[in-house]
Figure 1: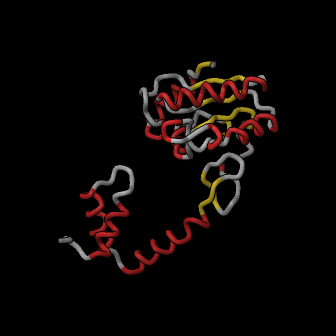
Figure 2: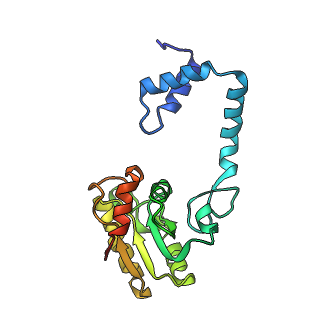
Figure 3: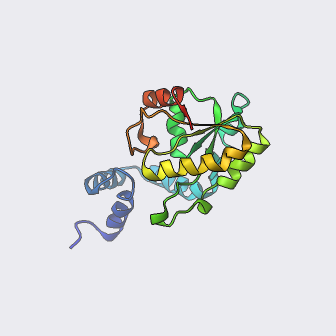
Length: 200
């Protein structure tokens, strides 16, 4: 038998789907929301309804953006479009930006090659990367991919694809924990990894 009414149980189930949120955390958040004034709950509802339309993905690099426009990085005149840092997903851009060291632009692959999960190279934004390399006369591509087997395989594949374009290809230094997700690395570790990146 449920401890709470069905609606509250359903809310907790949704909250538990967030990374790092367990049953107890979901319960605390749900109980806290019950104490909110009606206006605050209404505002949260409105923001969540707007989310799919207002928060979009940059048509240039795949980072999060607003209303179908380019992201802040791609719009900035201070960024060097001749250096592209390739990441698996957009949360990794947020982590890299916290280091305040990288001054180039980004490219979101949309994952990594993982044949056992049915994720082949055809599902990644590799053709778009090649097109950007040609269009912007890119001089360096930094592969900021996971250090697990799939990330390494993806890096090797990308290096082969980009070889004909005479572009320098490098990887982040291995100060990052083996098998870890870049999204969770601290800014100091990321800064060292960028500064000491190695050629492939």
